[in-house]
Length: 129
Image (cartoon, rainbow, N blue to C red; front, side, top):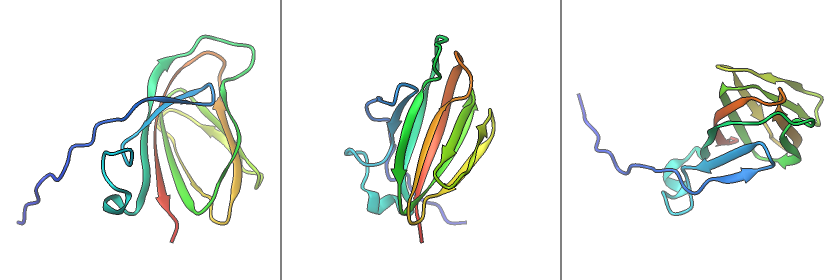
């Protein structure tokens, strides 16, 4: 059996808000390790485990484009509602996985499915082709 050495331990970078619902950090880029070494991954990130207070309007991030890559989202706390410009929509519940192929381009939005909840997720972006 062959063995491999651990090349590098990746620690999360700085957390940043995406919309008003997702407090995320990425493990690739930003000085951690080059994208070339992580091929086919484009991004691997984590959305912090946070309790959100109830508000009248669900928290989220409005319509934004993706093109030329695939996203994989795993919700392990809370529920994420998703809707895109191709007519796809649904709810990613705890333990669910969503795989979205952006291909030539798609606009999508995602937001908390419930008003006031505990939320955490893991996401990965892959290059297409």
